[in-house]
Image (tube, rainbow, N blue to C red):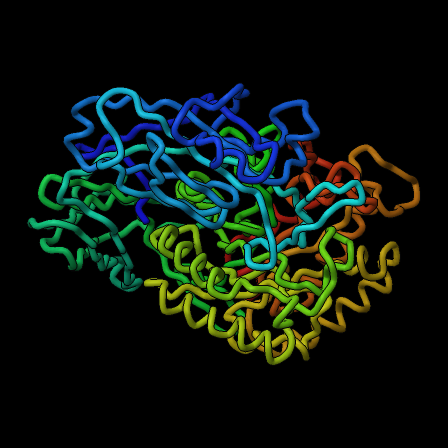
Amino acid sequence: MLYPVMTKSRMLFDLSGIWAFRMEQEEGEGEREGWAGKPLPNPMTMAVPASYNDLKACAELRDYHGTVYYQTTVRLAKAMLEERLVLRCGAVTHHAKVYLNGQLVMTHRGGFLPFEAEVSGFVKEGDNLLTIAVSNLIDHSTLPVGEQQTTPSGEARNATNFDFFNYAGINRPVKLYTTPQDYIADVTVTSDVDFEKGSATLHYALSTLGEGEARVEVYDEAGQLVGRSEGKTGDVTIEKVHLWQPLDAYLYEVRAYYERDEYILPYGIRTVRVEGRHFLINERPFYFKGYGKHEDTYPNGRGLNEAMNVKDLALLKWQGANSFRTSHYPYSEEMLRLCDREGIVVIDECPAVGLNLRMGGGFFGATQSPTFDPEKGIKTGEHHKEVLRDLVARDKNLACVVIWSIANEPDSTGKEAADYFLPLFKLVKELDPQKRPCTLVNVQMVSFEQEVTKEVADVICLNRYYGWYECGGDLKSAEKQLRAELEKWSTLNKPIIFTEFGADTVAGFHDATPVMFTEEYQVDYYEMNTRVFDEFPAVQGEQVWNFADFATSQGVVRVQGNKKGLFTRDRKPKMAAHFMRKRWLSIPNFEYKK
């Protein structure tokens, strides 16, 4: 799916702002009362885009369970109706029904990817009523996974099977854009690099609707034409190519034309592949330095916050970091386009978190049960495939994306797990025109012997908490166990990335003797872990959990959220942030472990 941009042939309108908002007081109230076709009764104001949970001083809204309605008036000029008109939602969490003038335009399931529909037949010149109904319900068929429970007081609630707050609402922008009637529906670009000649060949394919002639032109960052080709498919050779490099980005402009339509795609040229224990970017061994993150700011929640995106990448660069994982869902297109521009390397993860019902047991709120039980187990199989299709379709042309992550910490043991996950690896490889490496992020409770995806994963990604959840407070024992496990994973001769390792730390907690939750213990924890990483050639990356403190559901193991951040939620560094800065600035991006 193409990201909406303004060109000579396309108009673009952002509907961000203050919308009317109303919670249902009982299930189905909005449909029974016909809220989609008339002004909402007694609405409150609500910002779009943003999660609604923290925008009012209201416990009922923060912990709301059910459907809410958003509404705004869209005023259309006659000129817009003469073109093809498309309504696009960047992300609505988790289920959406979209109405124009009381008519249902589209529905969508899944809270982290865009969806759109042509709406030319639903609108008129002048005022149009746009209503979006949003449900935050999660269960064993949704990604992420949760369940419906009833509290002792008789109230319904979402019980999460994941350790982050279930923020909901219209979390990313809602936009209108136009195209000509004959238009470009999709653009796919891949590239081959001739390192000896210093040139590259772009292979492009345009998906179009209508009739007309097509061509593609490629421009460099100085605005100079460097190649062109005729037809819906073709090749463009670029001499003296500027490669996209980590922390040294270079983006060409691929301008596609079809009759009157024009679409402009920023495109970075780079190669990615795995060879033995090395992860190669542009044929050089790359070392991942960075974080697992969350889209989590106050009071936006999971809502798009472009100012904080800029700040976060600046802090990564200040530390000498070069990468992050989109844990545990696809991040906004705006963030990934910024990573393309800034040269930040991304492990792109789908929202398959909570696929481990054996980890329930009350820790996150969900009930413990067998993950793949036919009756009580997960029912996410087809939805998981749908999400992966949409993710690859959205992010396939991004240079920053170098690995696809199939899932985070699933129950990846046993025959049922193999039957579930192995086809997903095959699907992603078939979908991705660049054939990027694929991985599954492995949970600590799954041993080397049990992991069913270790042979098909191109990269081994480990979430390990030796010194916290295992051997908490005993770093000597933690070090011994970490070494013993790494000996086993190293036998695969594949790159190993530690995608999570961390210790909860309350900013300002100090002690002369390092004890858990103090800043001193967090520093010692990272010193031990990274010392072990350096001794194993197969370890080709370290991504700390987490970049910043983030919100979670309430519980006795969380103090106003997860405190494993190296930065506080408002991005103030803890002592460990300075420790990792000193370390990462001393480690080169390439050829750290030859």
